[in-house]
Structure formats: C-alpha cells, structure tokens
Image (cartoon, rainbow, N blue to C red; front, side, top):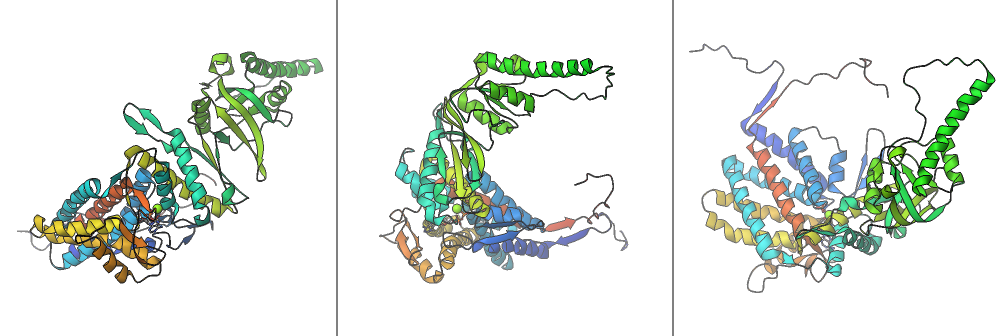
Length: 540
Ligand code: ADP
Ligand code: MG
C-alpha cells in the first residue's frame, strides 16, 4: 500500500479540472459563444461591430466572420469556433445556425446531466437523432429541383443574402450570383461541378452596391505598365510569364574596373541590348499583351510601349492561373521558352477607370467559363460585407446546382424535423430516448431565434408552427414570416435553402456538442510566458 504520499504524474503548475465541474465549465463557455451570435440569426438579426487590436473595424452579421475575429480563449469555446469554420468551408452558409444549434444541444444536455444521465448516453442519443434527422431531411423534407431552374436558384441566393446588410440590392446581387455560378458550371463524367473558386472577385469602394457588376472575363486590379502603351488591345494574344524581365543584380558583389568613358558606354549598351532582346522575343511570338508575375524593368516597359504591346507586371500567381484557364495561355518560365503556341486569346484587354484607380479587363476569353464580379459600394465596410454576402450566395447556388435538393427556410425545416423526431423518439427507447427528445427540442431554437430577433413573441410563433406541422393538415413548409411573426408557407415567400446547408449544420452541431460532452477532464499545462522581446526575432 502506498501510504498517503501523492504521486505526481503531471508537471508542477498544471491545472486540472475533472468530472462535473469540468463539463459544466466547458458547456458554459461553448454556450456563451452561441449566445453571442444568436442575435445575428436571420434577416432581422443585428450586426456586430468588431474592433481588432490594431483598431480596424469590421461590421458584420456573418457568424463565421464574427467568430474568426474575436479572440477566444477557452478551449471549448474554440471548438465552437471551429464548427463555424467547417460549416463555412463546406457550405458557405449556415454558420450561425450551426453554432446556435450546438449551443442549444449543450444546454439541453446540461439538463440531462443534472438528472444523472451519463454523457455517453446523451451523445449516443444525439447521434441516433442526427442519423434519423439526416434521413428525414433527404427523404421527407428536401425537394428536388432541376439545376437549371433559374428562378429557384435566385430564391436560394436571395435567402442566403437576406440576413446581410445588402438588403436593398439583394435581387440584383442574387441574379449576379446565379449567372456567375451557372457560367462556371461544368459536367465531369456524370457529375455536375460548380467550383466557385473560379469566380474572381474584386472590390472597389465608391459608387453604390447597385453598381456591382458581372464581368464576362477576368478582372485584374492592375494598370498598364507604361502610359504610352495602348489602353485597349483588341484581338489580344496574351503571353503569361512568371519570371522577371529585368537584369539580375549579381548576388556576389563584383568589382568592375572601368578605365574609360567608352567602357561605361559599352557596359550600358550591353544592358540596353539585353532589354531590347527581351522585347524582340515577345514580339517574335506575335504577342500583343504581356503579363508577368514578376517585375519588368522600366526600360523594357518603354520598349514594349514602343511596339504597342500592353504589359502588366507583378500580377498575383493565382491571377496568372485564372488567366491561363480563361485564355488558354501557357505560363512560361523564361522568355526564351515563349513560342506563339503558348499564347492565349481574348477579344479585348482594356484598362478602365474604376473609382479612383485603373483596372484591367480581359474580356471575351477563349474559355467561356471565366467570369469575375466587381463589387462596388459606398465605403470599404460596405464592399466587405457585400463580398461576404456574395460568397455565401455563390456557394449556396453551387450547392443547389450540384445536389439539386432544397428545403424551406425560416425555421420550417427545423420545426418539421423537431416534430418528426419527437414522434420517432419512443421507438428508440431507453434513456437515449430522452436525448433524442432533447435534440428535437433543441431544433426549435432556430425558429425561436428568428422570431425573437424579429421582435416578435417567440412563444406564440412557436405554438403556431408546431400546430402547422402536426396533424392531418400538416404543411412541412410552414416557417416564420418575418413581416408579421406569424406562421406562413416559406415556398410562397420564396425563402428556400439548399438541403446541404441544413445537413451540414446538423452534423457539425452534433459533432461539436458531442465532443464537448465527452470531455470529463481538462488538463492544462502551465502557460509558458512569452519570449522576452529582442531575442533575435524579426523586426516589424
Ligand atoms: P446563417 O449564418 O446560419 O446562414 P443567417 O443570419 O444567414 O445565419 O440566417 C439564416 C436563417 O434565416 C435561416 O434559417 C433562413 O431560413 C432564415 N431566413 C432567411 N431569410 C428569411 C426570410 N425572408 N424569412 C424568414 N427566415 C429567413
Ligand atoms: Mg446565411
């Protein structure tokens, strides 16, 4: 027998918290995060103003943006933030829903824990409910739509943007999103793919949101390299290079002994010849547009201008790749390798004034699946929020095109699942049944928050919704009408969402709730103090 001497397993200074208090703490932290974003849910949700350590301000209603910006300390709270990120990556939309739902699942779990129901039972019950929920979503609630139903796609885009501060221009933006995604949609085998990363987004403040436009081609945030170059080249033959058109400064310091003026001249002549040769090489291929990822010497730009060649320097690598896909040009490393076969084609390359600056429009590209969106808006905050809304809308439209399944919004889907899962719960039996019921209750938080944020009496709304989803006259499309807080058919109000967003929100919420619930021991190492300044780090 060991006689009372404690055995030290953990390093000194390690903090440990076990059992009930550990899980209570975790749940409280996770719920605090959920509560923070809850008021932003839905079209009537409020915005948050975030100020970072540099004093920069972001005003947004976007769940994931809020959570990315706030500096969360508690590990369980961090897990909730991760859910929002996953949801954002997978669907672009539904981030607030996933977080609010996770918070609600934990709240209900806390109640079950108090009744001495083991966390394992709860997590198992949640898992069962999730599985059934997914099945119901697919078989009972989701509706198939043809991927070319433009009206339906626009409604989905519009619903996704409904909650953001772009309300006035929602319809135009929704149309832009639908047109853009349809343009980049392609068939690969028997799958339909709409990769929204192919859509190039640029933003410029000035003008109004209504000036936001779709560009049939690639838009570059660059102006031509020399004022004497043509502003526009029609019938563009485009060369893409990813090396510099400069003379390399030698790495090793070399000393050249120049003894006479003629020698200096000879040296400069040599340099000039090299530059001329570069331009000759471009010209020989027949290119009239040159786009480089790296720098171009001023002298080279001057000669290019003389030849009437339009050139851009220091273009981002990702833009070069988009240009390559759009125009069919091959990106070459050195000018020596450049041949006429490497050139891409576009009807026009033109520099135009947008706001105070110039941008380059590459339009009429060889590949019809190249499209850009130029976002305009009064201030930078506006253009940023428009970008976030558009990103949501683009992903939503692409989900509907790829999957072809949508479901009603406004809390209709959640309340329907809730009613059906309550009926399903007794078939589970045992204590898990309680967790399935808790899950069903938790789903009601979505219509609840929507009504509450709209300034309505959420209890009344909820009672109406429950009634509408049950009984012989049940209508599964009934959700919260935010114009009056009453129950209404969401299809008729055009409030529809991709089934993918709902499916992912459910599974991310359960995943994180279960993860938090399974923790019964938090072992935190002693924090190491930050390294003293001046310890050979980088200067900023
Ligand atoms: P998330 O980050 O989860 O997408 P949002 O703030 O975008 O959160 O709110 C989405 C919720 O708002 C969804 O449940 C959606 O159905 C609902 N919603 C959107 N537009 C409307 C509307 N016009 N009427 C009722 N509910 C709406
Ligand atoms: Mg949304």
